[in-house]
Length: 483
Image 1 (tube, rainbow, N blue to C red):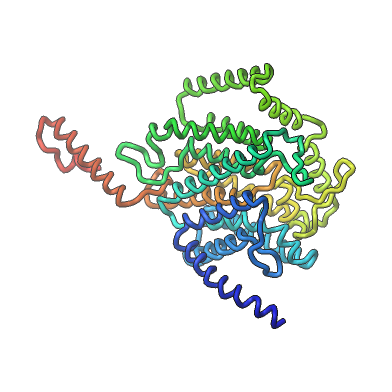
Image 2 (cartoon, rainbow, N blue to C red; image 1 turned 90 degrees about the vertical axis):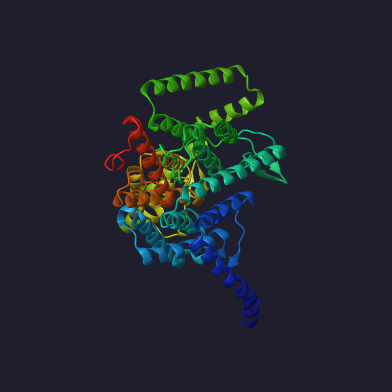
């Protein structure tokens, strides 16, 4: 006992000051806090798994510790400032409470370590990340901070993909690559990283507006030359090419859905919309013909094999559907249907004659199993509220496309913690819109007040000049100079 206490003392001497510094950063510099949360997920992918940082009776990982700091700061914000129920924060709090109750029950069933492993990533980290961003101060730098951090993470995943392909080459999904007598996935980064690439392309095509606009530009919009800058378009195209080569078929479907919704929701004239639709159809047909003729060589053959595997009766998707049926058809008490089974109770089921114990690979099923129908209703309510309450400007378009990508990704995967940041950003944007309505604004985007006053002064001066010219050089009256 004395030996354990002596060994823990140096750790506490280092951990406590570090925890204070991290809490200060999360409380005072939320863009840096968001970057730290996202960096913890990038590090997990780069290290091919999480590395324990501390032993607290269970293995605590960096994302756990950062998530705990973010959660504590978010709760302090709620206690100090409160939060309107319409902002969706109460729904996230409800899921956190359900997670905590299921965790407490799971500790008595399978122990602390097993219950913590089952709840940490897809529940605790996702909800705490979302709560931290949703309660962040209303600042003009929020959209720019999230965009930069997201694009930096996407660039890192592109580099990891290139390094992986340089070492093993490009292979179809059905192939297993032997490395040190161990078969590894031929895809260098997982599906959640590929989804971030798609969302990075969205942020390049629909950059989140945060700073004040120039005179004559609507708030929440960017100048057209900046939106259609060739560099942005080129980078978005490169990200999408990497997504195709990564061969995560669910992300392929999400990409197509995002493209269709971008075409449908983006403000444009009817003629331009039809022209884009026809051009897109022609490109798809031409691409299909090139695939059929073998114009893409070995790369095209690899992608064709992966696409064909998804349509096979023994595909991974079919295996997942059979697993979902087995999990949901298992007998349960009515309380388990309402509030879920405790964490650590397992996911054992027989699929195609074999026993498997991995997670359901469907976030809706995962939520229903652990948080019950109440948790599933809360999750869908958050997404419904976010979709309906987001503003109609460019920020709203970008975040709605993020919602579409998440909802489709959840069909065959559980959502990962970084997606909680985007969900929290949606709720944060709703807060901004509500505050803007209370102050008489119309956009829902945050701008610097000092710059807004300069814009008003510039508009008044321009108006006065125009009135002087129209009146033949006579000074404009006080009445004509009012805005």
